[in-house]
Figure (cartoon, rainbow, N blue to C red):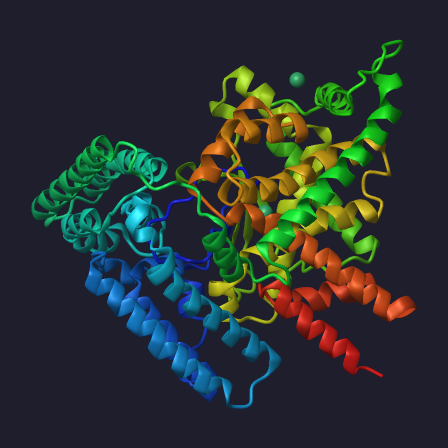
Length: 598
Ligand code: ZN
Ligand code: ZN
């Protein structure tokens, strides 16, 4: 699902677009064991990449924890001006070293790795010197995420994890003192988000850490309890400091809107598409109109069966909305929800094999499970995958059970994930979406692509796979499936329109509501949540449609060039073999490879 909650930006330098529902759970074991000690210097290229990663993680322990390098969590650098300068120095030095590495003879895969790192470091420089969100987005300052990881991930015995937590706790006061000094003219929206999210962090120190300490019965617990109390106080002081800023802000706050120049640049670094943000926006507007026309035709076909003897509304959007509303009544019961997802996965896998769309890998099975409690409430469903060097590791499809929902909430959720949409969700998350993409990218393991991979390619593939499954005949050409798929696809298209509309064109809340509720058939609640998200994020909402439309365009270009020689399965497997590289890069490599063939 893409409409999950807001992602935690626990590390301000985490420039990698958030994989909000694809959790690359590489884990300490998998990444640590990636290159055995003796093999680390297998080639000069690998050795230099290893040195880069070591230095990168030393500088940015938050990124190290994200990558499963938990030992780094002992350090929590304070976001001072000196720390910003250290990162700029690091970026400049490594851009030079990587450029030197690029002059040696490299495979296309290695060139791809270098291009990703180059883009990442230039993006980091841009964030630190141009975007400067460290000054206006206080929600970048929050220490809760890595503490939760350390408490909940079972990578070492609890007493050892608590030792790391204790070391980290001692640095929390300095962290928040520096953070408060860094803030200049924030936007009121980001300020309020920071207050809300740091309030959410309080429970970590009030409840979670004391509970874990009691469980472990550590001898050092008295000193640690003091460190924990000081950390708690530091969060409270930070919140009080933010409230003071808010009170004095008046109308002098910065706009939450990024504006055209910054939006275009951020789009270049994060999406790495063949077109610019303005071009994607135009493409999305055209796609919205095409979808409306298609949906109107399908709604017309379905009307008489659903509403016998009733006159159709004259307005096409109203007509479509009525049909969608009626069809949404068909859904599984709350009790059957998890079992239904379990039952669909093997059927989808068999379809993919029988229709020769992609090869599957039975040695890396997908296991559907109820989401572990501590991970719940973010996105509804998610994929947790082991690292590439763990060939028999299980990939989990986490499904939040609907137990905690009131009957009304469950009904509303199930209407949204109705008979048809639930199938599309499983295609997107699992087969042949995220889970199958990972199976393929793990065949040519690249640490760089796993860590610095392109979010638009990953999401774009999952969105593309929905379209491709329907093209292969999934759903039997039923107009109901066609209509529900179009509604789902319209969400991705309208995310891109909203993102650009709000940050570049000044779209108002009312205009956004009109777009989402009337033109994209979303509920009031969903539209309201999306408005919150678009105010405090930028470019990420465009990534799904960007990746999707770029993959589709590449496929059509190669199809036209190869004529009868074009084979869909071969296209998919070649595309996925490049790992999570930007579509623009894969596109160039594939066109070159095919042009070279006689
Ligand atoms: Zn119902
Ligand atoms: Zn996805």
